[in-house]
Length: 156
Picture 1: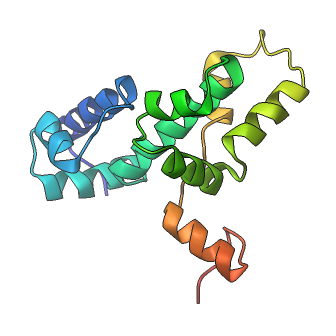
Picture 2: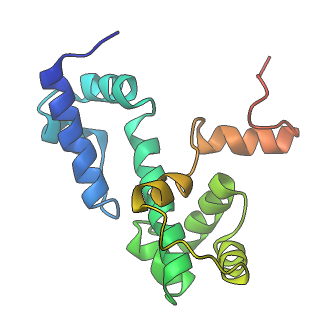
């Protein structure tokens, strides 16, 4: 189903705000106000337009930013957690592992162990390659891991 271009512009406004300040708290209520639509309409329309719910999109942006900081800075994991919007180091670490399959420390060590020459690769390709795949909710990934299923197996 195709969405109204005016509604898409409004949704993009909220998406742009999340991109610019992913470390901030972005409730559906606040994002709906930015978009000028009701909260329920915003949540439905955002998922229809971008393929993921607003919260999952924000989580993707936060993980993407954390991965970048782990790769490119000497900041501590705690500092990175707080800079990317988490209020708890434990929640950050657990969510990071659930989404990426490795802890922040493991990702940093792996990235540093493999020297890469990426100067000639366009930044948009690098960002896309490092974007976490959150096609299912983190809680569903945890449940599947506990059940011993792969992410792409269907649930009966």
